[in-house]
Image (tube, rainbow, N blue to C red; front, side):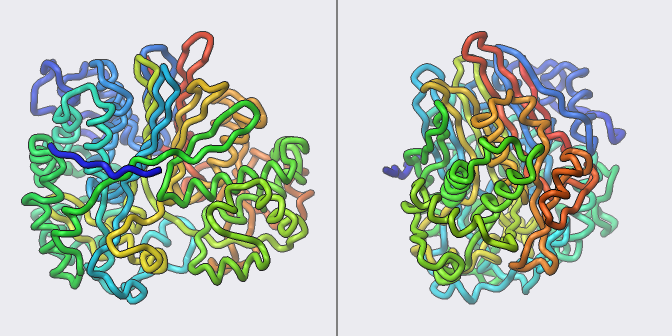
Amino acid sequence: MTEAVKEGPAPSNAAPTPSAGAGAAKTLAPSGWPAAERDHFWRIQQAALPGNPAGRGQGGAVATALNGFAARVGEEALRQGGSAVDAVMSSALAQIVLGGGAVISVFGILALMHVDGASGEVTSLNAGWNTVLGEDDPLSIPGKLNAAGDGIANMMGSGEPSGRTALVGGFMRGLEAAHRRYGKLPFARLFEAAIELAEDGFIVSPGLARYIDIRKQDLARLPETKAVFFKPDDTPYAEGDHFRQPALAETLRRVAVEGADYMYTGAWAAKCIEAIQADGGRMTLDDLAAYQPVWSDPVTIERRGHTIALLGEPCEGSVNLIETLNLCEVAGIRERGHWSQSADSLMRLAKSCAAMGGMRYETEEEQAATFPGIEMSRDARLSKEHARALWSRLEDQSPIRFLPKGTHSDVVVAVDADGNMAALCHSINCLIWGRTAIVVDGVSVGDPAAYMQTMVAATPQGGQLPNPIEVGIILKDGKPDTAWSSMGVGLHYQTTQSLLNIVDFDMGLEETANAPRLLLPISPDASQRELILRVVDGEVPDEVLDATGLEIKRIQPVEARFAQGLWVAIRRDAVTGELTAISPTYTNGQATAF
């Protein structure tokens, strides 16, 4: 069942000097934190590999995959009596500012899972992309991802800039809807930290500097975009520069006061449509005004006394994940031992993940040709019978085949004092800033339709696209146990392994975070061919890898960033109430608890 939501209203390691004055009462902004806290989290934010120890406490917890400074924003929301939803939303807004709108945007998308700590009721909110009512020929939308599949290369894309690549983002409508249902702090409070960060600015990190440098030609195309990312001397911002986003700060102030209507029916909406249409786009004000996020029943799977609840309709990632978990069960991975100790299990895991995970067939005909004679409808793919039929085909398949698709996002999870859990993933699902690089009053618009033409064509005009995000809640014996979310090019592989570690192999959360991993594979020519498995050097014994008989690429930990999925989670001990929060090892994210 689905329900549309209707709503109304310094040095590189040092913190920037806050404008509001330290000790400001009742604010989530960094100016109100103790100076030592600001300095500590700025050091984390600016470091490539700051170290991500588990967070432990009983009052509340927050974990992010990227932008550790934002985790402290969410913690502040909890400390001031906010809910888990207040924490993830205020963190997400800060993440967008800290990332300069590169991979996440307030005109992007979000997916939220929430579980009530007392009743165990799980709800799902999908604020994904809406297609454009006037787009009647989506297969002709310009653009595609680059063929190169490793690292930064597939973030570049190709094709001419076009406003037709823009879709209607639901982030701000989703944020408002979630706050109306589950928020405890005043709506405007959620924006305080993000506004201050945008207004005061911060030192450009090596990561943000690299993004700006590789996209500087696109970022210079439009005057408004160039004004954000280039300095007065006409050079792009670089590592160590002080980067401010005053236009974004003003947009966030207006939303904080006027609500999401400012972006969907107000002044920002008009500017957005003008910019998109100037580049040939077909979006109109009617598209923005009509947008509504969707509450829906979560998709669930039962496994060894656990209920795994995933994002509800319209979804794609949840179906992929349940199908893969069922394949892993049918393949008997648990009975054969952990994949880090069994070549047979590793092979079976690789085949189960590759069958659908991280993969999007361009057409139903392509999918049918890959698995002839097997029913591939959504409902069929959720069943154990389907998994058995599919595994019978995969078991003897050689070589393993897959089709990689990469997107970019950020995630945050939180648990509040009442035991409520919230798990969020938000994204622009496309190239960093988009090939078209439209920025409206500080907000990046993105170009998700540049590589999803077939999916847009299969979706009713003005309808919401199926969401590829994987985010969820684990209940154990009917009680909230773990909130988790995932992101990155290898998110499906990492999510599958993390859930198997917890549910099938009875690992604790910290052990799960540090367990050996199968990373996103690569293929020799970056198209649909036999895959080359990738692991972090030293995590899996050589004798296990050699026994697979497959080509294995061993990579160093520092190189794993663009091969892995990033998985964050918080778990509550049912007996002691202790919270454990974990964040990935190879990022500047952070787990905090108190």
